[in-house]
Image (cartoon, rainbow, N blue to C red; front, side):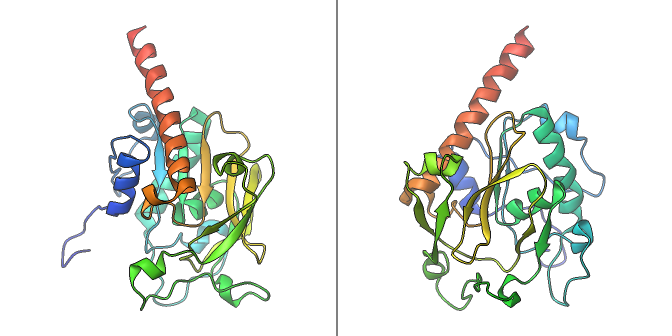
Length: 243
């Protein structure tokens, strides 16, 4: 809501990353009460970015108790994205999930979430200092270990460890079947995964690579790989339509 009116919107940092690093045209998919048909939607696009958001996936989707008072939710987004994740993977549509998008891909495929990671024994506090300037909030917070032979290790030029930002309270509790871990935080929390059944580029990360994307080699590489996969799909779609 902005004032009394509901709005559909996306952060400029995501649109900028799609335009500059992925080389694509960002188009917002509205989350309407009468859900768009997944087949029709997927036939008209080349890739799907599931971005972060102030809201969290409602916990009844992963069989957990209700959220605390004050936690933001977006049931229309859940109703749109959770089935869309499954349909996109089945249709071979390139996927990139960031923060909430990372979490909802896990939930869509049968995983669960910690609602407050910082309260779990042995876990770090992965939240940002919301009183700090944005440059500090989105600054490097901790290293992650990249799995050998993984997609991220390749995009990182073979590096085993990179520094990332951290702006979340929820995180993966149980990884969904068919997802492969790509990176972990120092406390063992999963920071990235890929669906093993994906027919094309599909990656989800807990941190925010879209922030000042062109100033970070790994962030730029992630969005570039997503853009490349989307262009390949566009080429296939065009050829199919001609034929």
